[in-house]
Length: 155
Image (cartoon, helix red, strand yellow):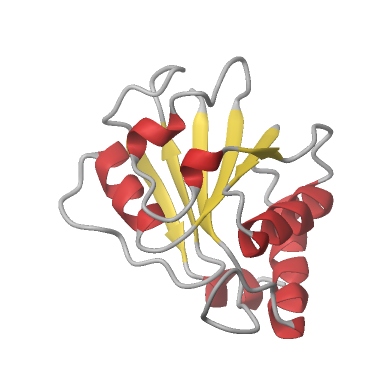
């Protein structure tokens, strides 16, 4: 079954505008990506919001996972995105990573897995939903939600 991974961008320099990741955010994401690589999640494609912090997060994780394809940008994944924003995503990939923002990643995780209320997402948090098919047809099965502290503890 295909798996959809949702990740919130890493820690930023600032909280206004379109900030870049902080040095701490970059370091943490590199460590998290190394753990994700060892877990062999099967991620074959990475999509991200067009904002700098999501693009940087997606690039760092994609490089750490050695994903062959480039990070694909989807404008609809910017702040305020919901499940319909995922319509252009999917195909033959067994694992797809989406990098976006809060509260969007938590709202989509809940909607895609049939849960009520948003799932909490810290910066750098990761969720996995097993789906029946592409294109996405909720509800799927929530496999895990990992706060960044868990991924970092495994590093």
